[in-house]
Length: 175
Image (tube, rainbow, N blue to C red; front, side, top):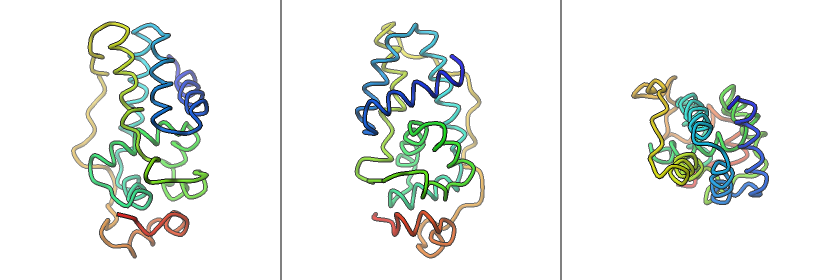
């Protein structure tokens, strides 16, 4: 699977789901089960590589503003959701996490940012196709700590200064 095919699959299933992360995950599983197991494994490698690229403190800070929390589980789920938003939003967020303020139309912390099911879509599809667990993607493990200097997640002023556009539109944190 080429990168373009990966993003087309992510985009088409998100659009068909109307942006709902749970529906997006279901549609993604359904579409992946139409492919052969090797292609599903390729999709999983593309997905995991992007989740790993988002393992950064500035992205975690943006997640904190949007979600009101940024513990490890919430951040893992957020990174999967971010990939699920498509190439433009994902790459824009990696270039400048504060740009999510204009890249996102709306953001409901009760629904959006929850991407665990999207992140597990390839696993589920592969198991449906083969009856086996998806093999490890063979990618290098991300470092134990995210890259970059951490904003002070407990200091609203520091978050507002680090992410002024996000803070103005979606802050203060709700959690």
